[in-house]
Image (cartoon, rainbow, N blue to C red):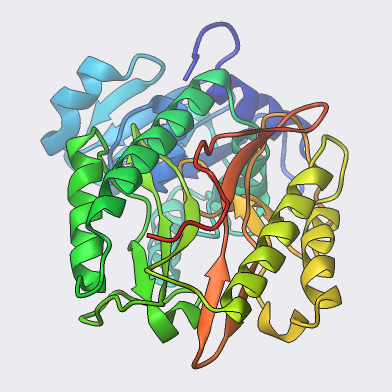
Length: 371
């Protein structure tokens, strides 16, 4: 992430100054408390699940315990690092030092128990906790547009995914189990440089492909099956997401028909992507193809979602989404048809929106492959 010139933290401070809070507060008396791991990584590039960012109008503190103190002090340069003895006392000291009267927290990630604890801590120094979605929206507005450095990491995650997937296809044959495919794929991804997998990999076959989020088990691939691969790797914190459906040995005319409908729908959705277009219009372009073909009842999920430090981020590409696409947004386009007790087909690409259209991170053919 490029932290030169105007940093993301400075952008957040400006958002905090300009945003009308739902609670009227004196100027310069509001701070932000960030505890979500992905948000901390976004602002600092430090992968830590235990630290806390405390952002005032003028200062930013990275609060961490001794286990991570040395590592944070060596790698984080855009914050003042505080290695605490007592977390609650450190928070209160900062509040008193800066005369903070209200602290915004991440309502999407803070548990009820944690919120209660924070309210108890801050109440002792006469400081309110703002637990609505104000801070979440401020951060989302920053994270929704990816920098070039972020796009490079996402592209690397996609490249790792594709290389592992192409290698895995060599072992897809009758008799191999879903679980074997998932384990081998994760091994290949990590071997090629992934720090982890984007989610529990979906490598399912036969009738289970009618389950959009089926879990790999002991079922084995058989001749005439579809095999669905919904897969992704994590590189330097950033995720990739891709789905391909392949056939083993042979396919029926009906299987081929459904595959071609889904592919047509996916291409139609991609064709609609452009800066200024509503996300719901992309969904509609893909969905209309499936509905017109008579299979609308077998397509119940949204067409896509944002991807970045989290596997599911804004914007969501759904029938109700009013978000306008902008350059730098990374989204998926992944329509599917799922026929219970028969089979399912999904095709998914991850793309970045550009002014004139999009750039596809995926470099894997989408024509039906029969192994």
